[in-house]
Image (cartoon, rainbow, N blue to C red; front, top):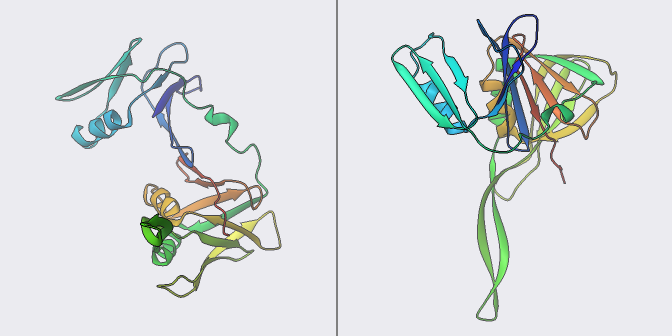
Length: 231
């Protein structure tokens, strides 16, 4: 997790997390901040632990040195060693413009995505005593095709050996384009992002079929998910 103070008119801390396939950005207001920008890379486990042990609704103070960050709340203090090195240049992957913006009910889209999510067993062939043997590689999430239309989003899943093809439609409003735009995404990532957002509606923004999708909430939280090949 990358944390940086910002030189906005109001003091804020921007938290950013990424694993290379998805990115989350959360600007959080604070009562005070340093007079200059500060950039630190904090272990994810430390942030999760602090969130779990902090009393609900309590303020958290953060201070960092060259190698350690200290987070404090009423009755709680946690110190963690900072991660050395530079955080990936996330601002370079944030879309500078979008071709379309889709406004959709968050719970309706979340329910549809969860209902369409299935796993598929993966195999590979291996020579065992001169014979070809089919070996299980584990399970993978089937990608979903998102078809963005002027008045809805159609979700489609291909057939597998265990499940048939399926599709469902969620009402939505699309601006910036009159024809359909198709793209593929990992449904578990989309569901995870939608579950972490509060509010009734979300905005989905895309540049084209090969670009990442930005999921934005009214409170400033934003998530970016890379597209996947639909095959």
